[in-house]
Length: 457
Image (spheres, rainbow, N blue to C red):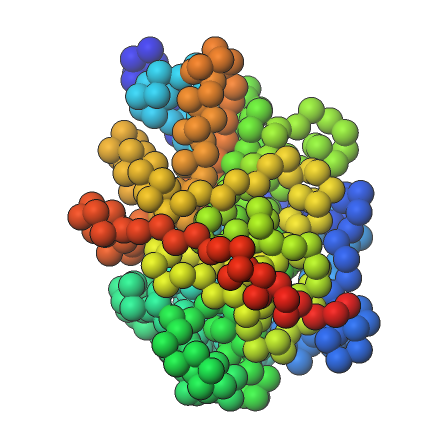
């Protein structure tokens, strides 16, 4: 097949931007276990959460009844700057692999943040502004979320304080520059700006930090500064709700070309990308219709689904957040500093954890860093797009699945999420290219230490 006979990119139009987010909880056969107040071990209420989160986001967090939640006009207006995002048929990759499989990817890198994170950042900034807040506080790992939120806060006129995982800030100084360009104040975490940060530094003075550490600092800062609330870029129900726009658009675009995936693959750290991409297709599975096989791909250096425990745990290292039942490595687990990408959270989103526990997410795979970068470089050379390390976990497994099709002769349709670009990850690509990149996989003993500290619930 020659390039002139192919359609590489399938675009919806602006009028096709969804008018409502899809809330998968409304269709789940078993809702995830209640989020608990750690002081009482009772399910949290809007009143419990509202000192930390925006009130409307608290309502979304606890909403398990409404299947669709309307997207505000102001949010859809900003979405129009970069949405709908394209669905891309990876013809060059198919040809290079000599596979009968059809490979599609939903590309979310077409905005300045280079990431899907902007989908939720816009919504959360909007609700903060609508509540009359002065600003918001957050954490960021690899920097995509912080970059996206800085853009959204600039758009809506909000202050932004970001606690960035220290090792990521060292590896990706240009992410910090982007955030500051959009007006954010960025601090490496753990820091001496918070009580929790000082405590972590005293106990682990050489730590490179973790998302759990940064979350603790961000929450403390938010609740001690009037007019601020905390916002988060992954894990929470509200974030997976906002990210459902990815799957809704992907499904509509595939319908335009008469396709439906046999396999849906997403990288998984806290769960925002995978949860968003699979949402509309998971609805089919929950309704008993024909549905894809769902594969979650996580880093072997932070393997919550494949080696963690399904248990109640804190969402932060400082142990001040509510308790969520999720696949977790323990709140004190800190991934190796040599891990180049994001996907550094010790637990998985409660929604995804429950779906995986119940068998609706069919499989979880943990991939080592060098194998992921093998796939990333191969993809870049064939497809011409430099992928983010996070997304490259999904690329690795998509290639594996396409090779299986070549060996079996099956012509499956594969869909994966390309959450963003890798232009801020060039230090990691340099390590890969010069051979200095290493793999660090935690031992059973190292994991046991974090799991031993799980709260008794």
